[in-house]
Length: 332
Image: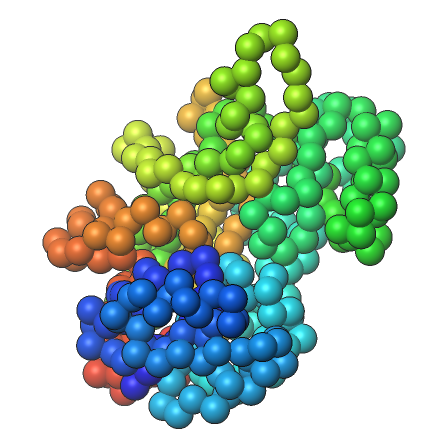
């Protein structure tokens, strides 16, 4: 069997893990990225495309293959084209439309009895520091903070002028929570009937993290474009609440977006000075922050006692499903 993915995001980790679990591998790559990915010997097959329509046709030509999605898939290929993928997809493809809509995304968290930031329906309602977010996995590009309804309206106008959005209904306006970001990476295993904590990361954002190095008399507006990830380990007393939220989320998705979460997902959170967890977003598949744990995180070792990246964990789950004759339980 072949495990395949799109050349971006966490594709190296995914295919390296697949090879460690004994699978053949294939990568779907644009012509501009092909040379880079040919440097890695664990990639067996290259599907090189000129445009996104050709990409889907090439992918659908694979035989005996499973496709592994990641955060760049919808952003680069588009949700309409992704819906044409005929290969079995690891995880729940029905979550894609929810992830690409900020309002629907937050609704799932709220339905899961998870604490989330206050959400404002209109710029006129803003009465505190907020962050305004674009839909989809844009790595923070276009996000901005504002203190007043006037600043919100001005920021939205700039996004419209730059054609980063078609209309303001695409945006979500959230209270800006003061605290530290912690992105809790989980994996729900249908084969083992358990949820695992696979790691925690902090996003390294170019402007907002660079501002702290400026002299005090120089001012600049923060932006949130992600350039990398930093590993983190939480106080152990925080983890029970994180697991409670993860289990709530799994139950909600099972009821609302059948068959629910399968495999990796992430609760993207702020931890306050009261050690409370406020979840401001979720990712319903592997996140790029897992790339810092190719040899396993401090948490994955607790389950497996061997190197276990999330990429390898995905391949391990597929292997378990094949052995049990239940591959339909991990793909959609």
